[in-house]
Length: 218
Image (cartoon, rainbow, N blue to C red; front, side, top):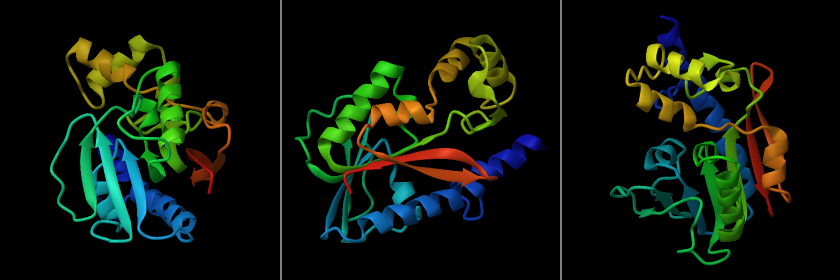
């Protein structure tokens, strides 16, 4: 019952979910930043999905030419969206400032440890004339990936125990361990260190900063 309620809160496919409303506020802020830019705007979405842009109202909008980079490729269903295979930590297939905006939503916490996160940050700042990067706030008491309070502060063995019995309920111990290791949340100081020329916008939920958005060169 509790898990079902939490799932509804974080279900980005639902128009009424808390996470969808938060994303809509975030994308409204993003649109305000982009409004002065000459069209069409070339956007590189690092680790995103077509569904995100569909739900945010950008699909088939000729004012935005969106390239989505991911570890695996799928087929595009929209005239203004192309999908390519690549790695956020090494985007050498793109030249410096190849895009008007480098965009990333809830990805940098998944690319590895501190060294890998720094590699991604450096690549984001290299390929985009501007950047807009969002990541969950490590200090927020509710961990959004595993739907468990203070999960990010627990030791690995306890994380694995919870994953195997709670969510996403992976019974295999090795797979559960890999899932636990797949997320490394960032705090404000780390985000500021990774993007030294950026500004941080606090996304609030229940009066606390649940998400950090760092943006630069606008």
